[in-house]
Structure formats: structure tokens, C-alpha cells
Length: 329
Image (tube, rainbow, N blue to C red; front, side, top):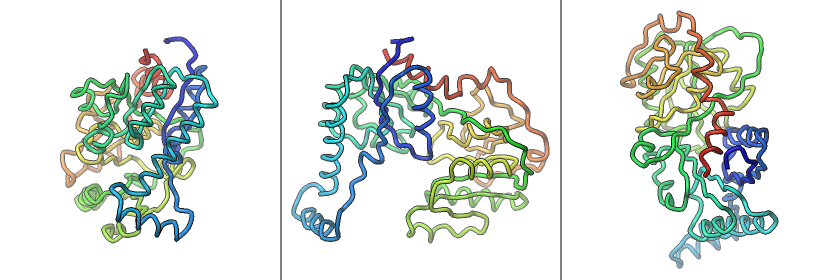
């Protein structure tokens, strides 16, 4: 199918506005794309308090939760309605297979020639994504260990497009915004305590109010909604470096890494395999061996070392889409 215009169904959450640029680039490259946001697809809502109470009664007497059954039905009929109004797809690309059951996969297979999976989390962190791997013809992953152990094709995150603007004054040594887990929060807190001279601008996204009681560090700010676009850009520009703490044993490169490349910022990361990438420069990157490792002041006070564009080409969005499409055979 290389070089041909494909008819694609892309089922992917647009969390943090990550899917929209991919869909746009696919269309720029000549493909017909329908995007289904999997968050909306599986977003079941009770329509009244009585409805919620009724579901609890059914949960008590049934062997499967009412909400799960209704969500599965909602996904099925949403897909059924879509397929009824469209021609057969050359490929259906998914990023979160755990929301689908066997009936959904059977329906998708009837309406496409190729089933493609692009994993944006490691199987270590999201083992539920590994339960339907046999349903896919081609599987990509951003996690190097999953590629080595399972024969997945490597598919990195991409460098976001940055609008040109006047340089902002750098007020901070490090910036980061991360989703909250207790382990991750404690690791970042340990890093900041071990580096008291660092001027930090670190945020954690906490959407569940009960989790806030575990987040009390004076140097860490809490937010309840995603930091996106102009707000994120402004915060990155005000810092000399970006802090990147992976979750669990994750070694795949997060978007923090690619934001550092896009904005020409230094990087402090827990990714132990980053030195294997073409863009790695030890003057720009510190790999933390443990959460309490100290960082010398000179790292922040020396200028960023420019990276040759040839070393960055395979990490562009254009290449991301080309790599995906060219491996759909």
C-alpha cells in the first residue's frame, strides 16, 4: 500500500491534543481519515440518580457490572452505525485496545483489511493492553523492551510543532507537568529535596480530589486540568530544562523528551536508554540513576548544544505518519 492513498479509521483519545496533529498530517499526506475519540466512544453516563441507583441493584444480583455492559453496548452500536455509513477501511488503527471486547473486534475485522495497534504505554504499565494482541496484524510500540520481547515495531513519539516567537526570560532551572501517581510524586519530591538550590516550576495533574492528600510538597504545584498549547508553551519557555520522570519501569521516550527537543531545552530524565538515540548529547541531557541524585549548577549555566536536523528527522510528525503507513502491508 506504500504510496497509495488509504481509507483509515483512527481510534485514539485526543488526550492532551495529541491525536489532532496526527490526523491532520495523515490528511496532508493524502489519506482519507475518520477519527473516533475513544474517550467519547466509551464515555458512559448515568442519566439520573434513579438510573445510578438502579444500576447498583443490578450489580448486586448480576455477574457483570451494569455500567460495563452498557458501555460495551454503546461502543458496539457506535461502531455499527459508523460502518453502515462508510465503505470498507484499508486500515483501522487503535491505541487503546482494552476498551474493546471480542464482539467489537469481530465487527472491526469485517470492515477493514488491516488491524493496526500503536501502543502509547508500556505493557508493564498497562498490562490490560496486551489481552487482545492476536487481533492485530501490525503492532507498534514506543517502549523499547516491549519491541525487543514481543517483536513489535518501534514507533516513537514526535517532536511537536513550535510557533516562532520572541525568546522568554528563563526564570526557572527546571519545568515539568506530569500525571499523578504516588510513586512518581514521591520520586520527584525526593529529587527536589536533594537539589535545594534548583529553582523549580513543577506541576502534577490530579483529577481525583482524594489523591490530593498525598501531595503536600511545598515546591510542587497541583492542577486539575490538562496544561495545553499556549499555556504549556509559556511555561516551557520560562525554564532552562525539562524534568522527565517515567512511570514504573517505563523506558520509552515520553513527550517531555520531545518538548525539550522542540524548544531547545536541556533535559533531566530517568530514561536509561536515551543515550542510544541519535539526538543524545551529554551536555544537554542528564540521566538520573536515582531520585536523590544531585545535579551540578553548571548544567543549567552552560548553553544548549544545537542538534543537527538530520538527527531529528525520524522524530518528526511527518516521519511518524510515514513509518506507520509504510508498515501497513
